Length: 326
Image (cartoon, rainbow, N blue to C red; front, top):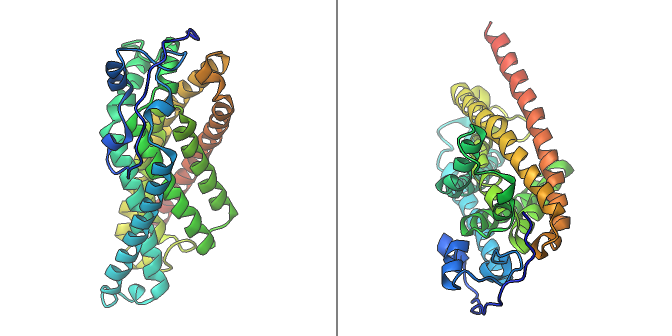
């Protein structure tokens, strides 16, 4: 299960700096790399090391900066769009209201859409194996395969992590400007650090596709629903557009239950098992990532607990709405 046997040294072409705008720009997959090197690897694990396949740190940092600029541009574009809607309803006449809507739609919603889009496009990588093993139709998630899930480089996952980190950078800044509170800022910073660890040194790409990609499907309606919150959104928007608020609320509840309450616990179960296996392994890749593995396990436990809290809030909110109707 843990194979620290040395492999022949393979010469790797020097990587060039570039903007990372497509999945192909993030380098070859492990399978493509294996064909190119006739199955040899510079890693003692027999799995190509992240540093041989991933883009350069400079390319990553520059692209993150570009992502932040794009989100900023989308935000200003939405501000301009809502300016043209001032005569539609009095709620749009207030500049602060327009800016809040622009933030939640142009930044939060669009960023969640981007990472979930890439995640869904690559959902077969993780969900097929999880589903087949969970229903006992295959041993695709067996302990023997943990190294591939924990240490194999996946360009799509690297792309998701980069987009996710770019969003967290913008989100942290916005939370400070809008005075969201220290809890939100801490959450964004922790999420950003976790995303960076997923890229450098590189870890758990198999699971990143779900946790930072597919699961963000439920965040999209939440970003839209946030506009109707009297504390963090636009005061009076819910009263002005009650049916729209109910629709977004229902969509959020459904996607949250599917992504965060059904699929999330199953993926977390396999992820924690793989982390424990990796911590026992004495291979070079495992030993060099032990601190990150422990951090990922802690973050996973904390976020999983939050899902339970959020589910309780959803149930209570639904109860309150039903009582109002009755």
